[in-house]
Image (cartoon, helix red, strand yellow):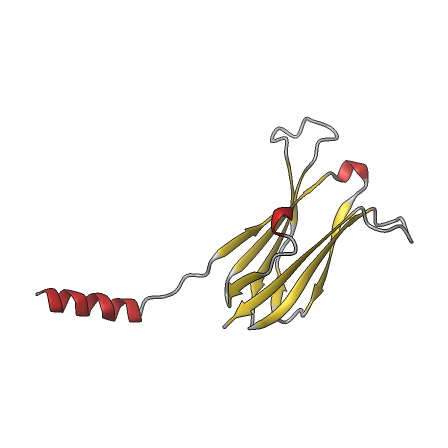
Length: 129
């Protein structure tokens, strides 16, 4: 009976579907190598305050390795009544194919030309097959 049960568990594990993982990254993970599997999702959550005029922009190297999904902004104040309060910009990606790439985020006022960003964050990402 034990052998049958162990065989059944082994057989089931061989044919089980591997679910994609979701990785949540903040500024704390910047500059650390992020290693994910093909199919995994990455959410980059960065503090922002658009009332100051600053926003995050992205430069994605190796755009075939990660595909960018819908991005958005979530205010810290759930009621929406706190004028001038900050929140979080959320960027979504999916690991499409094996390889290495880098996500470069820049926090700046888009209309200020020739002015360096006030923050820069880099996330080196490796996608395993």
